Each structure stands twice: as C-alpha cells, then as structure tokens.
Length: 161
Image (tube, rainbow, N blue to C red; front, side, top):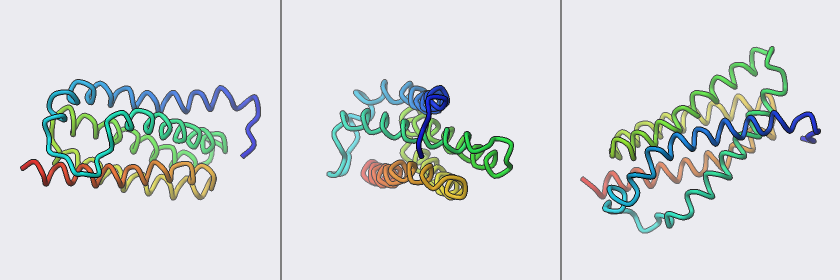
C-alpha cells in the first residue's frame, strides 16, 4: 500500500470527491434535523446526532483513498473503469439517500435507496477486491455503517406510520 509523494494530489482528489457527495447530502440533511427528524420516533439504538458528522468524514476519507488506489492501478484497464463506474453509482446513491430520506422526508424512499446503495456498494467492494484488496478493505467500514443506517431507516419507517 505504500504511498509516495506523487500520490498525494490523487489521494486528495479522491477524498475531495467523496466529501463533495457528503456536502450534497448535507444540503438536504441539515435543514431537516431540527424540525422533521427531531420529531420522529427513533429506535433506542439511534446514535446521538453529533456522531454522524465525524463518522461520515472518516468514511468518505477511507472511500477517497480506496477510489484513488483503484484509479491509480490503471485507468486504461477495463476492470478498473468498471470498478470506478460502480463506485460512481454508489456515491450518487449515497447522496440520493439524503435527498430521499431527509429532503423528501420519506423513510420509505430512503429505505429503497439505501437497499440499492448496499447492493451497489457490495458489488463495488467485490470489483475493488479484484484490483486492490486494501482498497476493498477500506470500504468495509462504510458497508457496515450502511447496514446499520439501513436498520435505523427501517425502524424509523416502522415507528412512524
């Protein structure tokens, strides 16, 4: 995995791309938290609100490093382009979830999107694994957090008919 100085701009670009998806999602999330989201019934295992920001910053950082590692292994390779396309789809679904859940204030639409996200993320991780095991492993915390977020989303849906 040893990175060199030449890798720094690419790593920064990968991280910035992923953080940008977070910023897009935040545009839908932030206005809804003190109003709609605060009024929802939530399961007992819902983390405090302050946990989500640092968790996502870390996850987007790991994602950015992973996508750079795959890109750096040779964009001219078909398998790399395919893995990056899958990554782009899951990243778009990531931002779309915030728009569906918070923007549309719809736990149902959010659940549909997050299930699609998890399927696409599992495929992305498998594609990354064929190119760089380390890059795939960097996506595992994101996948686990996505599973947890899916469970939260499901419980919010069930608890708020």
